[in-house]
Length: 306
Image 1 (cartoon, rainbow, N blue to C red):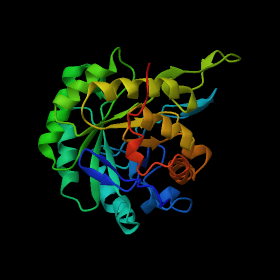
Image 2 (image 1 turned 45 degrees about the vertical axis):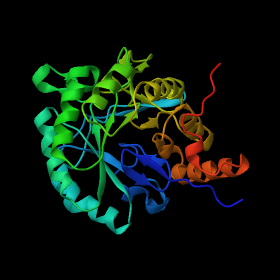
Image 3 (image 1 turned 90 degrees about the vertical axis):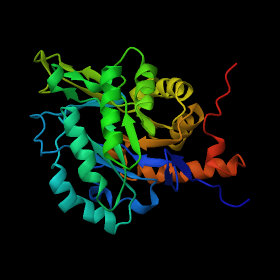
Image 4 (image 1 turned 135 degrees about the vertical axis):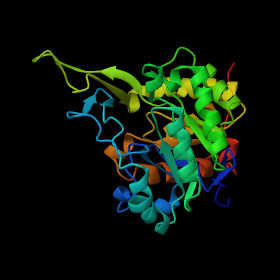
C-alpha cells in the first residue's frame, strides 16, 4: 500500500499534513529549527503578536502542575514591526507555512494588525486570540462574550484576504455559542482550546506560586476537556475545527481528528520533547498505514456514538 495522503484543508488554507504548533509554545519558530524541520510541519503558529512590544508579567511565570503546567507569561512579544523585520525572514527562508497569532486590547488593534500582516509575503493565515481583555469594556475577554467575539471576527474578516482562524477560550459556559458567533462573523475556522484558568499555592509560604496569582493551565491534564469541546463544536459549526489541548502523542492527535478536528496544534509537549511535532506526524502516518486508510481525511469526524 502506498503512503497515505496527509493533506488537509483549513478554511481554504491547504496544508500538507494536519500537525501544527500551538502559539506561545514554539517561540517564533527559529528556536526549534535545530530539532524540527519547519517545512515538514503543516504550519508553524508563532507566538502571539501585538501592535506594540509587550514585556509580559513578572516572574515566576511558569509552574509545573500534575500532568500539566500553569503559565502567566502575559503575552510577552516583540511587537508586529520587529516580528516582520526580525522574525518572519527566517521563517520565509525555512519555507515554513506561517500562521500569525494576533492579539489586542480593542477591536481597532485587531483590525490594524490584520491590515499590516495581510500585505506581507510569507504569511499563510491569521489566528485570532480572543482570550484577551477588551480594555474598553472593563477588561471582559472578547472570547467570553458572543457579541464581542463576532465583532472582532467581522473586523478582521473585512481587513484581510487571508484565512481567519479564531482561537476560542474554554473559560465559558457554552463554547458552541461562541463558535457559532465567530462562524457567523466570517471565520474560516476555529481553534480550541486555549488554556483553562487555574492557580497553584505554596502551602509552606501560603503564597501563590505565580506572581500573577492565576495562569493558564495546559498539558495532558486538559485533554479530556479539550476533546469534549472539539467534539461539541465540530457538530455545531460547518467550518473546520483545529484541536488543541494536551496532545503529546500521535494517538492523542488521532483522537482529536476522530472527534471532528481537521488539524491539531501541539503545545506544552514541545517543552518536554522538542521533536514532539515531527514524532506525532510520523505516528499519524504509521496509524493510517496500519489501518489501511488512504487519507487522513477518512479519520476526521469518524467517531461512532451509540
